[in-house]
Image (cartoon, rainbow, N blue to C red; front, side):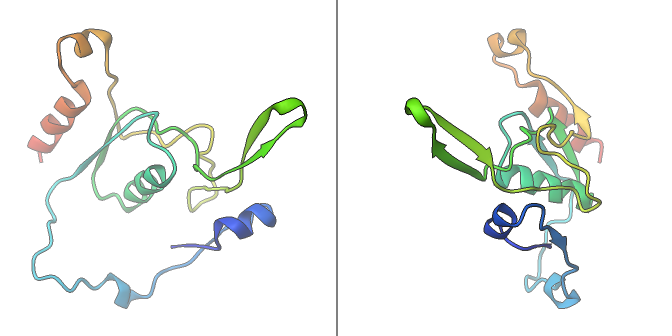
Length: 139
C-alpha cells in the first residue's frame, strides 16, 4: 500500500513510501470470490482515483487493461488565483509505480491498445469493448 498522504506529499515534495500489507489483510471473509478473467477498459479520461486503480490492477497482474493510456493526472490539484484575474492549477501529489517510474504526464499504458474510431462511433460500435470481450472469451 502507498504510505503518506496527499497533504504531506504536497507540503514536503516527493514524500512517497510503499509498505507491504500484513498477510492477514489479504484474507477474504466471503465464501465465493470471483477469480475468472477480468479486463479493465482505459482511456485518456481515466485519471485521479481511476488511474490509481488501473495502476494497482496492472501491478497485481489481475487481468488485462484494454484501450488507450490513462490521462496521466493524479487529480490532486491546488487551485489558486493569479494577478489580473487568472487562475492556475498545480499538481499537488506525486504518484509513481512502486519502482519509482513516473506516470503523471504520460499515463499508464494498457496491456492491449485499441482506439475508438470515428467510423466506429458512427456505426454505433465500441471496438475497445469488443476487443475486451474477445480477449476474455479466449481465457
